[in-house]
Image (tube, rainbow, N blue to C red; front, top):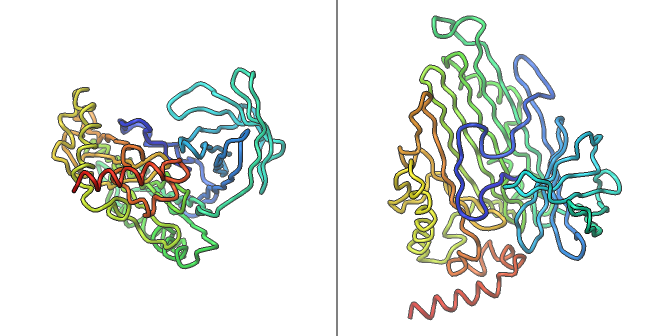
Length: 385
């Protein structure tokens, strides 16, 4: 399910809790210390009232949760089953990602199937409209998140690694299905999918844990932050806890793909030639607000793009700075902890830079920005003459 990043500009990520929804902690299957579970994602498109929407639900052994967005806006609203709701749930609470209060309710006529009907109600109960959706992967991937977890006794007990102590490694993979684009599916499976044999996963995790201190923890979790308009954006979130060094390090890496070809996308694929100065100016304008808060120095002032890359999301492009970009993003408290700063640029802010016929074209059309993009391009060309 999508990782919620900022929709208005800035995000500060602490080492406590990770960047998105917490991954399931219990396991479905265990063998020799190796645990394994699957989380399945399903996607529907249709209407709430008269407005087009896209809805996604993640289902696993710990239950079901999801989100939906009005296509014209792209901003996701969280869906969680109503308390005490049986499985599979039919009543969901709606919340904005940056709010704790319930903003509405989705009541389904039956558990989610290929078609969904029901009613949306406002939180005060004064408004209600019908909803009708059908399962749809026309411009999106159908995927499952596969997570493996290995908990091992330390390999050679000593004074710092007493017998009976453990180390821990968790790794996620993505199984992608693209029935209409088999060549793209194969490319994405090679890049994002797990090894064919479970033994290969276990060997990789065991090798990574050799010689690690008691209490060592490493997690590599995947989050899909965009899966629409033939675009797939996957954030790989890394966390490493080393009790001997007294450190907690966190960082992210992002990969963006064209679902029609399976090709990985870079900024020059999305933005017109010469985009660099204007993009740098936009990023520095957002970062200036962080500099005023204190404690971070002038992170990103050199104008370099962050090491983690960028993510395509339904509302724009997002960039995340971490300790690899600036040592000041390490908090030297009782435990040395890495921090992250995220910057969000909306499609409207980026219009003069976006290739109107590039991979973002379908996204701009859905947001009602295609004509504005063409106008922005024309104004940019005129100003350059």
